[in-house]
Length: 130
Image (cartoon, rainbow, N blue to C red; front, side, top):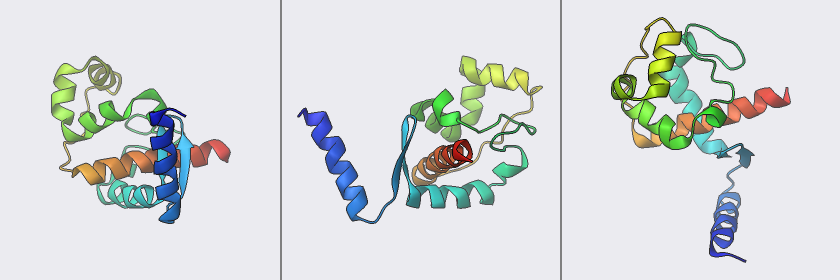
């Protein structure tokens, strides 16, 4: 067994032994506790006003966003939305697609950003099963 495989199994064992529900959502291993916190952050920041899962509102549909964008891109997006809108080709394309309406720059901690990513992955997974 490779070292990577051993680390992956160890991580899964630790998550399960802590009572954490873990499920794979293409590219993101969803941690239910982080996703629960992410839902709170999503709601507290009013993300639902512009974003939904499985339908388009005033901003991109978040269904499967963790499949379309990697976690590093999403972290940079939440950390420095304005900087990404100025420099990132994908962010610039979204800005144009949504008629130059910019997502506000939220001040989110790294744990909150991580939690929102887990929530988006979990919600997408839930919607796919529905």
